[in-house]
Amino acid sequence: MSLEKLLENPRVWRGSRQVDARSGLASGYPELDRCLPGGGWPLEALTEILIGQYGIGELRLLMPALARLSTEETQAQYDHSGAHTEPGWIAWIAPPFQPYAPALQQCGIDLSRMLIVRPKDDSELLWSAEQALSSGTCAAVLLWPDTLDDKASRRLQLAAEKGHSWAIAFRPLNARQQPSAAALRLELQSTGQGTRVHVLKSRGGRPTVLDSLL
Image (cartoon, rainbow, N blue to C red; front, side, top):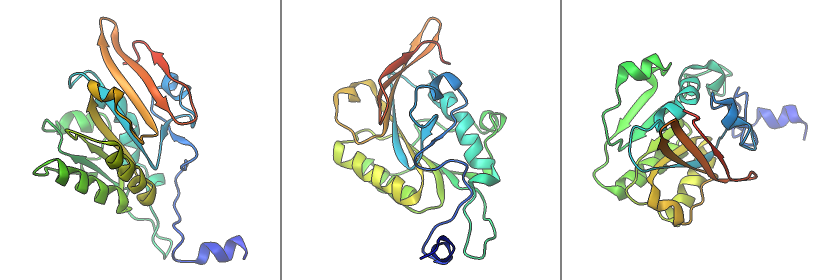
């Protein structure tokens, strides 16, 4: 079967992303991108960010990439007629704070592409994240689970692959010793000079520490 015939199959997803699952989404921080195998955030995968407290730069680290996902036409999926649809949603599931719209807008986030989900409990949180990731309509899904065992992380990883989405789970520092299916695990620590980013696990890469990245 020729490539042209294959692409005519309506079950084949076609998009205009400049990156795919084998390459990364530029983080906006060249020093970090050089440490990641795909040259950026791993797409269609689960990223875990371990923090001891909120507000030490964890969202600032994501903003350049999220802004791109929420606004660029190159991230839009295409329907079967060839006409592009809107960029994917950026879903926030159980954030421990109310996202501050003016600050997000200043970072370049298209607020019309944001969804905020407030689940009743952790089981509903994980179900919501899995559904959002696998839907094919969310470019990124951010979640703040109280717990995330190895089985749950694998389900999120599979859902991200299915929906061509990016999962970002924020977890406490004590999760460092727990197994996870995440393609990338980062630990953020606040220092006198800024925020240190420790790459704990990077599929295809090596652990490394970036001082004062933020």
